[in-house]
Image 1 (cartoon, helix red, strand yellow):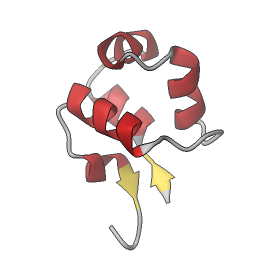
Image 2 (cartoon, one colour):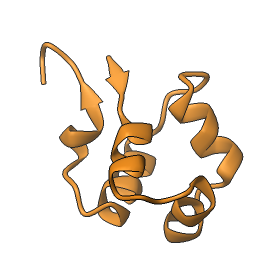
Image 3 (tube, one colour):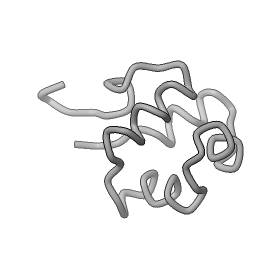
Length: 65
């Protein structure tokens, strides 16, 4: 499964710092999620989706979506 937070964030013209401020998730955690170094929790996906005005399912790519 591919996490699409970078794509969603850049489509909204937001910096990592701006998304961190909007979500309360640290820049380093968001950066690790965007680079596939860590998997987000469902709670983190929910907060990110809400901040970007998206559905959680918009933030990942999967054949079983």
